Image 1 (cartoon, rainbow, N blue to C red):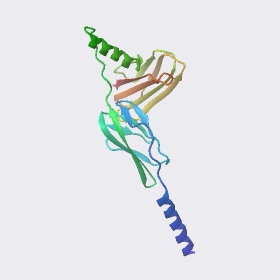
Image 2 (cartoon, rainbow, N blue to C red; image 1 turned 30 degrees about the vertical axis):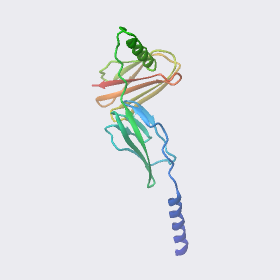
Image 3 (cartoon, rainbow, N blue to C red; image 1 turned 120 degrees about the horizontal axis):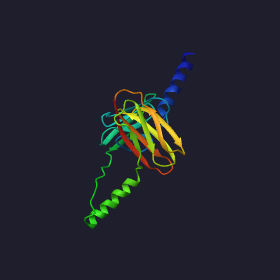
Image 4 (cartoon, rainbow, N blue to C red; image 1 turned 90 degrees about the horizontal axis):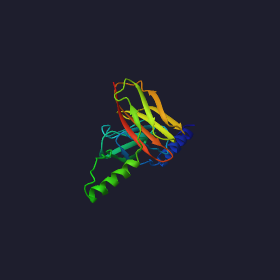
Length: 198
């Protein structure tokens, strides 16, 4: 009986030693205020960030960029094993008005227009807000709206297929800074808005 129990425990130990944790998959770059989804072949466990000042990760592997940096390590730990992936957090691009005084300026202006096309004119108001926000969508499409707090927790997520106009929502959260990300899943256009809840 003792021999059988020892054999079973030995087989279980060997199985654990031979077990391989799948590598983490997903994007290795995220913008400040945006999110990316990471996945691992092993279910359960916990996710952690090497620096929450630059990027946070929730229990589902959703990473939110907080501040620009060249390296943040995201780790998934399960059943005593762990996998890690290095993430770059990029700053949001700054678009500056350029005069048309010369050909170089015209070229830069055209470049600015090209960047602008990747971000639809989405209005989120009022800002600051007491809780209720209005998201004004510029065109028909399949939209995904995600609101996260300053540490990356998702506080609101909504999909709106084939709609435009204004969508109202009450954040009902703790006072502070929130990021509202709006993505058109058909065209890939997106907008990120910073909101202050007072």
